[in-house]
Length: 219
Image (cartoon, rainbow, N blue to C red; front, side):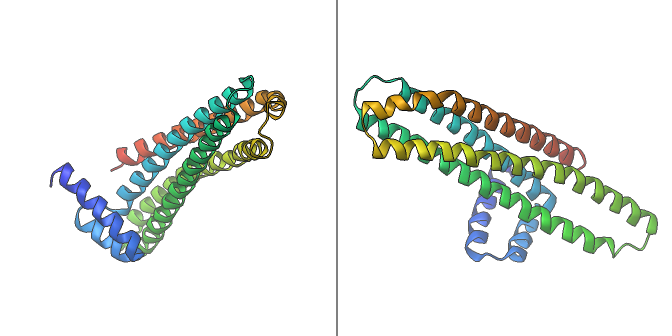
C-alpha cells in the first residue's frame, strides 16, 4: 500500500474513531492497515511535538504583539487592542492543541502498556518473558521522562497565558494612552516568562525527538 493511500486511510480512520469513541474498534481498524499501538504512539508523540513547535511560535508572536502595544505613542488604541487580543486568542488556541495532543499521547501509551502487560502472561518461555518485561520497563521509563517534560512544558504555558489575558483585559477596560504606557514596566517580566516557556518547550520537543528515534530504531 502506498504511503499516500495509507495516509488517507489513517485520516479517515482517525475521523471515524473520533466519532465512534471506541478504542478497540479504532485499534482494530488501524491494525488492519499495518499500524500497531507502537506506531500510533510514535505518531502521537510526533503530533505533540509539532503542536508544541506551533505554540512556541505563536507565543513568540504574541510577545511581539505585546511589545508593539507598549511601544506605541497614542495611535489607534482600538486597533492596538484588537491586535493584542487576537494574538492572545491564537496563543490560547495553540495551547489547547498542545494539551489535547499530550492527552492523545497518554491515551495510546496507556493502552499500549496494558496490552504489553497482558501479552507478557502468554509467554511459555520464561527467558523471553523476562527479556520482554525488561524491554517494557525500559520503554516505560523513557516514556515517563518524555511525558513529564511534556507536562512541564504545558504547565509553563498557563502563567504566560495569564499574563497575556490580564494585559488584554486591562486594555479592554482602559483604552487610553495612559493605560498603554503603564504596561511598559511589565515588558521585561513578560519577556522572561515567554523565554522560559520557549526553553521548556524546546526541551520537551528534544525529548520527543529522542523518544521517536529510539522507538523507530527498535522497530
